[in-house]
Image 1 (cartoon, rainbow, N blue to C red):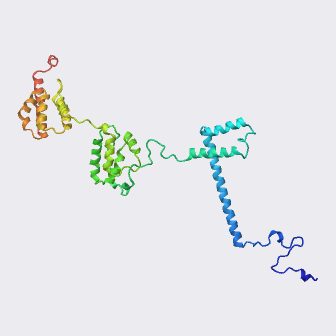
Image 2 (image 1 turned 30 degrees about the horizontal axis):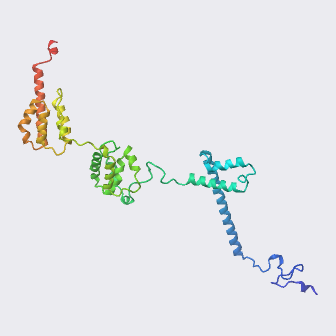
Image 3 (image 1 turned 180 degrees about the vertical axis):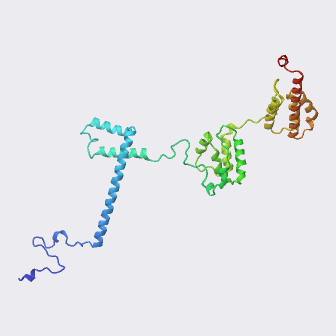
Length: 328
């Protein structure tokens, strides 16, 4: 047979004479070779998996480093102490301390439990004020505060005085810029300080939806600080002292009278007449107390009596000077 008969036919795989007729050469018989596109896709897939493995390794290293740091700062958990106790009791032959056995699994479980306990967010566990939450509803922030808001010079409130006084002063200021309900809700907390600010920041998030609700919560919280209302009996108990000047007594009496609600000028004049020992004032009140219609009329009558009494005192001093001054 000539050499041309030994030339393999194109497309036919040469069989090995040492193998059985049905055995494929080099184990590749009957398998299709991958195309160039498939090889490139496989390479990309391998690279992607390698990157994922590297990323997982880096994350694992960070977790282990964090775990070591936490274990050095925090006390050991009861479960971890139990594992250490078993290691001491069992020794090297104990199944708890065997490498690759249950000890590694238990320790991994302890590590994961430690991470879950110390690294998970503690929402709802923190008590006290939370500066990150906002008690105002989101609907109140759809509009912006007027640009001239900062120039108002709003009053402040720390929770130690009458809340009604602060609310009244706040409203008088906000009327200057024609504030809306949302503006009032956003501006009111700016005036809080001290204990009042602590109360506000401890409110649940989004609980306040309008200013009426806001003022109700505010007044209810600080109701104990409301000033006691004065009555007519408080005015009756206000008496002029024996050595007290009429001008000083009237200022003290007038302060109380302004706090008493529902009292008329004529009734107040009768009370003032019984509370003073000034002859000039009592004489003037007897004549005109029933005809007084306005508080300004009563004030004018008292101021006139004060001037008259002071003039009489000066005249008396001029007639009867101090004996020490005359002797000198």
